[in-house]
Length: 261
Image 1: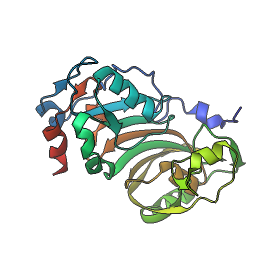
Image 2: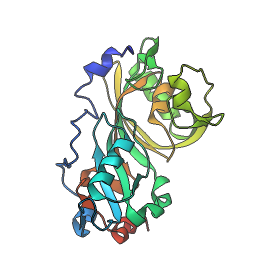
Image 3: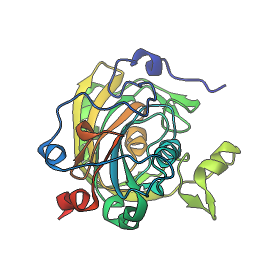
Image 4: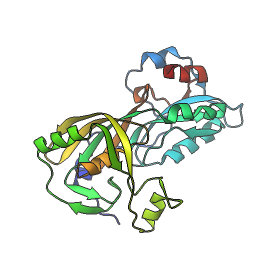
């Protein structure tokens, strides 16, 4: 059984608190003018004509992105795929494309993303999240040191890709090698950190708001700060806001691409 950091339990009320997986749940926050103005298609029963469009799904902690997509596929009867995965422990906005609209995936996968995260700065785990084993423990940074590190991580930075990731190493997914206990020297990836703001810090766990380019890992930022993510919530993908998430609503193709123009 993996050893988990004390902060993972101590921050149960921190940013990105896990919620029960309910396919019919929806955001309680106010919806944007974009969501209010578009006319949604309704979900079809399985076996009905395949719907086409975009679903904004507020993923809870626990299930994989694939499990969420499979659930939507089974409920709609449509071909389905997502435009950027979320780790099982993470919550927040998942873009799910349905039917013929899946052919437009490339318009969405390159969008930048915004997150809120809580990072335990006193422990490093093997996966960069609360699911991994603790591999190092140390005294956390002072607030002045943390602010200096945060400043250094803004802009174009090279970050080490997490071992538990879908990047291929020698033709095999890194996470599969990690599961088999194979040690891999992971490469770095040039990442644009558009914004990185310190929201709060209790001397061990730091709350951060992150705006990062597509393909960037918040877990890599956590490692660069000397810690690991204990919670992670995606709040935006490009112009799309998790406040507008509704798993029962299919945004028509024209309305879905309009914010990208």
